[in-house]
Length: 240
Image (cartoon, rainbow, N blue to C red; front, top):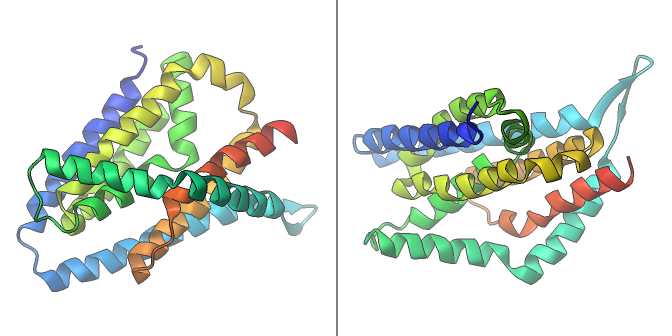
């Protein structure tokens, strides 16, 4: 099988979903856009909560226990320090502004928000990492094909509410997943089941933050928390 096909399928789904969303956007009154954005935020919140709780709660001898709480706290705190120091949110927003000027659409007030929010939503998570690894190691793009369907639906909604900026999230998606696919042979031996579980837990927590930003129009600097994913993975490798 062709290595990297999964990311190409995923990218195509993002673009197609985004174009459908743009088409729907043209016929939607503002009140419909506002309500859809709230519904979208609510959905993303519950996706994040379900993903996080699914990794935190384990059944042991008929008793429901929690795991990974301290790891999550430490990862988020350390990630926040590094992310804030690097100011990743500002750099991503500047890249969004750069893309906006390149397409000569200076009047689109939602372009950068759409780009940043959609990018964080479709790039964060274990499916992106594990699927890219499978694609790079064996050419198995099944997981990324499944993710492509989900991302396509997400982009329909994002593009319908934020506009064309959401479609440009395909750029970080291709860079992120493509890099993991190309480096899969080197990365795979280090990614233990504990590391992937940690990555999924912290990634779901960040997705929850994205949903809170959409739903309540807050400003959690999710991009500045992205290094937490690295710390979560490292904890899984070191403390396996």
